[in-house]
Image (cartoon, rainbow, N blue to C red):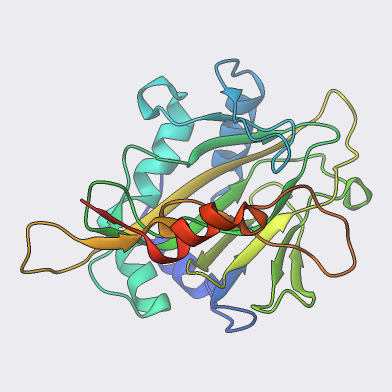
Length: 259
Protein backbone atom coordinates (compact mmCIF):
# COMPACT_ATOMS: atom_id res chain seq x y z
CA UNK A 1 0.00 0.00 0.00
CA UNK A 2 2.82 2.40 0.90
CA UNK A 3 6.28 2.27 -0.65
CA UNK A 4 9.49 3.92 0.58
CA UNK A 5 8.85 7.18 -1.28
CA UNK A 6 5.35 7.44 0.21
CA UNK A 7 6.73 6.99 3.72
CA UNK A 8 9.46 9.60 3.22
CA UNK A 9 6.89 12.05 1.85
CA UNK A 10 4.54 11.38 4.75
CA UNK A 11 7.28 12.05 7.28
CA UNK A 12 7.79 15.50 5.74
CA UNK A 13 4.07 16.25 5.97
CA UNK A 14 3.85 15.65 9.73
CA UNK A 15 4.68 19.00 11.31
CA UNK A 16 4.01 19.16 15.05
CA UNK A 17 2.63 22.35 16.59
CA UNK A 18 2.79 22.98 20.33
CA UNK A 19 -0.49 24.83 20.90
CA UNK A 20 -2.72 24.11 22.63
CA UNK A 21 -0.88 20.77 23.05
CA UNK A 22 1.44 18.91 20.67
CA UNK A 23 -0.53 18.10 17.53
CA UNK A 24 -0.25 17.74 13.77
CA UNK A 25 -2.87 18.16 11.05
CA UNK A 26 -2.08 16.57 7.69
CA UNK A 27 -4.05 16.84 4.44
CA UNK A 28 -3.57 14.29 1.64
CA UNK A 29 -2.34 11.90 4.32
CA UNK A 30 -2.44 8.64 2.34
CA UNK A 31 -2.41 7.99 -1.41
CA UNK A 32 -5.80 9.29 -2.53
CA UNK A 33 -6.91 6.02 -4.12
CA UNK A 34 -6.30 4.22 -0.81
CA UNK A 35 -8.32 6.77 1.17
CA UNK A 36 -11.19 6.57 -1.33
CA UNK A 37 -11.27 2.75 -1.20
CA UNK A 38 -11.31 2.86 2.60
CA UNK A 39 -14.14 5.40 2.51
CA UNK A 40 -16.20 3.27 0.12
CA UNK A 41 -15.71 0.23 2.33
CA UNK A 42 -16.82 2.24 5.36
CA UNK A 43 -19.93 3.53 3.55
CA UNK A 44 -20.97 -0.04 2.68
CA UNK A 45 -20.11 -1.43 6.11
CA UNK A 46 -23.07 -2.25 8.36
CA UNK A 47 -21.54 -3.83 11.47
CA UNK A 48 -20.98 -0.78 13.67
CA UNK A 49 -22.95 -0.53 16.92
CA UNK A 50 -24.09 2.23 19.29
CA UNK A 51 -21.31 3.75 21.39
CA UNK A 52 -23.52 4.63 24.38
CA UNK A 53 -23.30 7.73 26.63
CA UNK A 54 -25.56 9.70 24.29
CA UNK A 55 -25.38 12.82 26.47
CA UNK A 56 -21.70 13.07 25.55
CA UNK A 57 -21.47 11.47 22.08
CA UNK A 58 -24.90 11.45 20.48
CA UNK A 59 -25.60 9.24 17.39
CA UNK A 60 -22.10 7.73 17.55
CA UNK A 61 -21.56 4.20 16.23
CA UNK A 62 -18.32 2.23 16.57
CA UNK A 63 -16.53 -0.99 15.72
CA UNK A 64 -13.48 -2.07 17.73
CA UNK A 65 -12.98 -5.56 16.28
CA UNK A 66 -10.11 -5.54 13.74
CA UNK A 67 -11.02 -9.01 12.45
CA UNK A 68 -14.43 -7.76 11.24
CA UNK A 69 -13.10 -4.78 9.28
CA UNK A 70 -12.96 -4.52 5.47
CA UNK A 71 -9.76 -5.27 3.56
CA UNK A 72 -8.46 -1.77 2.75
CA UNK A 73 -9.25 -0.43 6.23
CA UNK A 74 -7.24 -3.32 7.68
CA UNK A 75 -4.36 -2.41 5.36
CA UNK A 76 -4.48 1.21 6.52
CA UNK A 77 -4.38 0.12 10.18
CA UNK A 78 -1.54 -2.30 9.42
CA UNK A 79 0.50 0.53 7.97
CA UNK A 80 -0.29 3.03 10.74
CA UNK A 81 0.68 0.41 13.33
CA UNK A 82 3.80 -0.66 11.41
CA UNK A 83 7.32 -0.30 12.81
CA UNK A 84 8.18 2.22 10.07
CA UNK A 85 5.31 4.52 10.98
CA UNK A 86 5.84 4.11 14.72
CA UNK A 87 9.40 5.33 14.22
CA UNK A 88 8.09 8.46 12.48
CA UNK A 89 5.73 9.17 15.37
CA UNK A 90 8.48 8.63 17.92
CA UNK A 91 10.72 11.10 16.12
CA UNK A 92 8.05 13.74 15.58
CA UNK A 93 6.57 13.63 19.09
CA UNK A 94 9.82 12.86 20.93
CA UNK A 95 8.67 9.55 22.34
CA UNK A 96 10.35 6.17 22.74
CA UNK A 97 9.15 2.62 22.24
CA UNK A 98 5.61 3.38 21.11
CA UNK A 99 3.24 0.43 21.04
CA UNK A 100 0.10 -0.04 18.93
CA UNK A 101 -3.16 -1.32 20.40
CA UNK A 102 -4.37 -4.15 18.19
CA UNK A 103 -7.41 -4.59 20.46
CA UNK A 104 -8.45 -1.10 19.33
CA UNK A 105 -9.86 -0.38 22.78
CA UNK A 106 -12.00 2.76 22.30
CA UNK A 107 -10.66 3.14 18.75
CA UNK A 108 -11.38 1.48 15.41
CA UNK A 109 -14.21 2.77 13.22
CA UNK A 110 -16.14 5.81 14.47
CA UNK A 111 -19.24 7.23 12.80
CA UNK A 112 -21.64 10.05 13.78
CA UNK A 113 -24.87 11.05 12.05
CA UNK A 114 -27.03 14.18 11.72
CA UNK A 115 -27.45 15.80 15.14
CA UNK A 116 -24.44 13.96 16.55
CA UNK A 117 -21.67 15.48 18.62
CA UNK A 118 -18.72 14.56 20.81
CA UNK A 119 -18.42 16.85 23.83
CA UNK A 120 -15.02 18.28 24.71
CA UNK A 121 -12.99 15.91 26.87
CA UNK A 122 -9.59 14.53 27.68
CA UNK A 123 -9.15 10.81 27.11
CA UNK A 124 -8.47 7.95 29.48
CA UNK A 125 -4.73 7.73 30.14
CA UNK A 126 -4.18 4.12 31.14
CA UNK A 127 -5.23 0.75 29.82
CA UNK A 128 -6.83 -1.26 32.62
CA UNK A 129 -4.93 -4.29 33.94
CA UNK A 130 -1.73 -3.29 32.19
CA UNK A 131 1.19 -0.91 32.50
CA UNK A 132 0.33 0.81 29.24
CA UNK A 133 0.04 4.59 29.18
CA UNK A 134 -1.75 6.26 26.29
CA UNK A 135 0.49 8.75 24.48
CA UNK A 136 -1.00 9.64 21.09
CA UNK A 137 -4.27 9.62 19.17
CA UNK A 138 -4.45 9.41 15.37
CA UNK A 139 -7.72 10.16 13.58
CA UNK A 140 -8.03 9.63 9.82
CA UNK A 141 -11.18 11.16 8.30
CA UNK A 142 -13.06 9.52 5.41
CA UNK A 143 -15.63 12.06 4.22
CA UNK A 144 -15.36 13.05 0.53
CA UNK A 145 -18.50 15.19 0.42
CA UNK A 146 -18.16 16.97 3.75
CA UNK A 147 -19.25 20.64 3.76
CA UNK A 148 -17.83 23.11 6.26
CA UNK A 149 -21.29 24.44 7.11
CA UNK A 150 -22.26 20.99 8.39
CA UNK A 151 -19.91 21.54 11.34
CA UNK A 152 -18.09 18.51 12.75
CA UNK A 153 -14.61 20.05 12.87
CA UNK A 154 -12.49 18.62 15.65
CA UNK A 155 -11.67 21.36 18.16
CA UNK A 156 -8.53 21.56 20.28
CA UNK A 157 -9.15 23.59 23.48
CA UNK A 158 -6.63 25.17 25.82
CA UNK A 159 -6.03 23.55 29.21
CA UNK A 160 -8.20 26.10 31.06
CA UNK A 161 -11.15 25.58 28.67
CA UNK A 162 -11.29 29.24 27.70
CA UNK A 163 -11.40 28.81 23.92
CA UNK A 164 -10.86 26.42 21.01
CA UNK A 165 -7.43 27.18 19.57
CA UNK A 166 -7.61 24.90 16.53
CA UNK A 167 -10.48 23.61 14.40
CA UNK A 168 -9.88 21.01 11.69
CA UNK A 169 -12.52 19.89 9.19
CA UNK A 170 -13.06 16.09 8.92
CA UNK A 171 -12.63 15.95 5.14
CA UNK A 172 -11.43 12.93 3.21
CA UNK A 173 -7.79 11.95 3.79
CA UNK A 174 -7.18 14.53 6.51
CA UNK A 175 -5.45 13.13 9.59
CA UNK A 176 -4.87 14.62 13.00
CA UNK A 177 -2.34 13.27 15.48
CA UNK A 178 -2.09 14.62 19.01
CA UNK A 179 -0.66 13.98 22.43
CA UNK A 180 -2.97 12.59 25.10
CA UNK A 181 -2.88 13.70 28.73
CA UNK A 182 -5.17 15.39 31.25
CA UNK A 183 -5.07 18.67 29.31
CA UNK A 184 -5.48 17.48 25.70
CA UNK A 185 -9.06 18.76 25.47
CA UNK A 186 -10.78 17.93 22.18
CA UNK A 187 -14.12 17.12 20.58
CA UNK A 188 -16.77 18.38 18.15
CA UNK A 189 -19.28 19.65 20.72
CA UNK A 190 -21.98 21.20 18.51
CA UNK A 191 -24.50 18.93 16.70
CA UNK A 192 -23.47 18.25 13.11
CA UNK A 193 -25.92 19.30 10.40
CA UNK A 194 -25.12 16.87 7.60
CA UNK A 195 -27.90 15.33 5.47
CA UNK A 196 -29.48 12.16 6.82
CA UNK A 197 -27.75 10.09 4.12
CA UNK A 198 -24.28 11.31 5.19
CA UNK A 199 -22.17 10.64 8.29
CA UNK A 200 -18.92 11.79 9.87
CA UNK A 201 -16.55 8.81 9.51
CA UNK A 202 -13.07 8.24 10.91
CA UNK A 203 -10.52 5.58 11.77
CA UNK A 204 -9.28 6.15 15.34
CA UNK A 205 -5.97 4.65 16.49
CA UNK A 206 -4.22 5.01 19.85
CA UNK A 207 -0.57 4.55 20.75
CA UNK A 208 0.94 3.61 24.12
CA UNK A 209 4.20 3.23 25.97
CA UNK A 210 4.88 0.68 28.66
CA UNK A 211 5.67 2.12 32.06
CA UNK A 212 8.60 0.52 33.86
CA UNK A 213 8.06 -0.72 37.40
CA UNK A 214 9.91 -3.01 39.79
CA UNK A 215 6.57 -4.07 41.26
CA UNK A 216 4.24 -6.66 39.74
CA UNK A 217 1.40 -4.09 39.93
CA UNK A 218 0.85 -0.37 39.40
CA UNK A 219 -1.25 2.14 41.33
CA UNK A 220 -3.28 4.73 39.42
CA UNK A 221 -6.07 7.13 40.28
CA UNK A 222 -9.47 5.91 39.12
CA UNK A 223 -10.10 9.03 37.04
CA UNK A 224 -7.21 8.09 34.74
CA UNK A 225 -9.16 5.11 33.39
CA UNK A 226 -12.02 7.06 31.78
CA UNK A 227 -12.66 10.20 29.73
CA UNK A 228 -13.02 13.43 31.68
CA UNK A 229 -15.72 15.62 30.10
CA UNK A 230 -15.02 19.35 30.14
CA UNK A 231 -17.41 22.30 30.36
CA UNK A 232 -17.19 25.13 27.82
CA UNK A 233 -17.52 28.68 29.17
CA UNK A 234 -21.01 30.20 29.13
CA UNK A 235 -22.71 27.09 27.76
CA UNK A 236 -25.21 24.82 29.52
CA UNK A 237 -23.73 21.37 29.00
CA UNK A 238 -25.19 18.02 30.06
CA UNK A 239 -24.03 16.38 33.27
CA UNK A 240 -20.26 15.91 33.25
CA UNK A 241 -18.03 13.52 35.17
CA UNK A 242 -16.51 16.49 37.00
CA UNK A 243 -20.01 17.32 38.27
CA UNK A 244 -20.67 13.91 39.84
CA UNK A 245 -21.78 13.61 43.42
CA UNK A 246 -19.33 14.67 46.10
CA UNK A 247 -18.53 11.09 47.08
CA UNK A 248 -17.97 9.96 43.50
CA UNK A 249 -15.67 12.92 42.82
CA UNK A 250 -13.82 12.14 46.03
CA UNK A 251 -13.37 8.53 44.91
CA UNK A 252 -11.98 9.57 41.53
CA UNK A 253 -9.64 12.12 43.07
CA UNK A 254 -8.16 10.15 45.94
CA UNK A 255 -8.94 6.47 45.43
CA UNK A 256 -6.69 4.23 43.41
CA UNK A 257 -6.77 1.03 41.42
CA UNK A 258 -4.22 -1.74 41.69
CA UNK A 259 -3.54 -3.80 38.57
